[in-house]
Picture: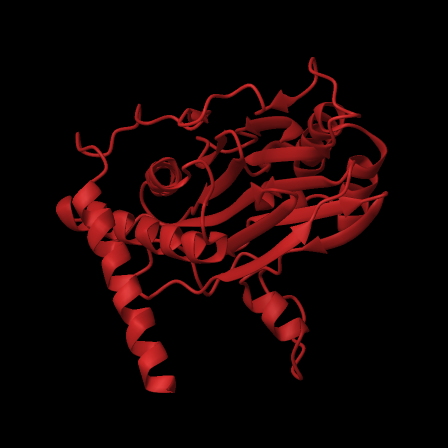
Length: 300
């Protein structure tokens, strides 16, 4: 598996950066994750970091060296991350819970499968054209697809996220078979809120990710002005062995079986002094699997 990757996160005009992103991989699989901690609620950066750490820990455990069912894994991992955030808030006695959006993608073989909750987006660009992108879980996007169309709706009003007292709504898509030169980008709303899809696709389609991403981020910061939101981007370009250049990308072919590489920090954030609760993750997954089993039994 060979790909070029570039990631960057800028604070913009905000007091702190609540975005988090990273990627990890084995010999035959890769995971890319981005979370945008939500303002208006406490400790958004904690929610984002907990989401990344939980999903990364589960991926490290399950990718041996591949994820058997990527759709099921992404659904379970997102829900487990949600439960970890709720647990954190409960143990600290918080009156309001930390919250975050999330978008995560798994690459295996030549296919990409992803999950998203909220308004952090994933774009796939092929031959300079937008192949697909995620649809935001916001009232604006909901209404624009329905019978009622309301003007001047605040795009920042989301109806779902991780960490909310209500069960998160999320979408899983894929697998999409990747072709040489395909670009896959995860980003926070600090990017797409300042730039149009046309501008984003134009940049991604005309340059390699190591050149396109910095240009996109700088353009978004400039457009956002002194009050710009955090801008975070994680982008990947799919490469075949014949086209691969070792100085510009990542090759997993040299990784030994059982080895796991990651840019996602295992800690370093004040989460009350506790590590991730592995038992809590296990219980979360067990509860999810039991709910799936009961639902399937009712349909029979």
